[in-house]
Amino acid sequence: MKLLKREAAYEKLIFYRNICEIRRHIYIISERFRKTHIRLVSQMRDAARSAKQNIREGYKKGTIGEFRHSINISLGSLEELSGDVEDCLEDGLITKEEFGKITELIRSADYMAGRYVIALGKMERDGTWKNPRGKVVR
Image (cartoon, rainbow, N blue to C red):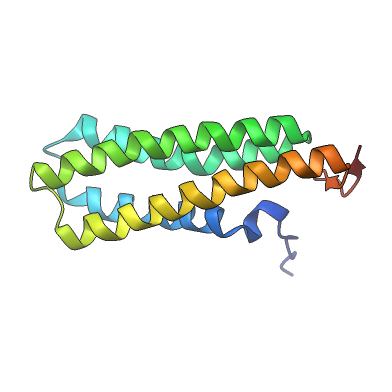
């Protein structure tokens, strides 16, 4: 019998879903040049993974401050990845279409995450944020 895992609140956020998609795209695209650009591929995959995992970790810590901080760290990882993706385009490692798709996902995630950080501040002031255990933290 399979146990159903309850979806964590962050998994419903569009920017988190975009970051998950970015990670998948980076893995697939970088597979083509993983043997010739080992360090670059490692850094790109690490940045994409970090962007995703920081959100998960920060949410699970249970405070709004930790969650907000983890989103900001995630955005830093996306910025690092963005620079690597630009380099890949310049070096002919990815196509313009691949660059456009990843760049659009990064921009969207960056914008929405930034707006969410602002909303978290409002939730904190209003005392309406629920921690991972479903408790309203005032």
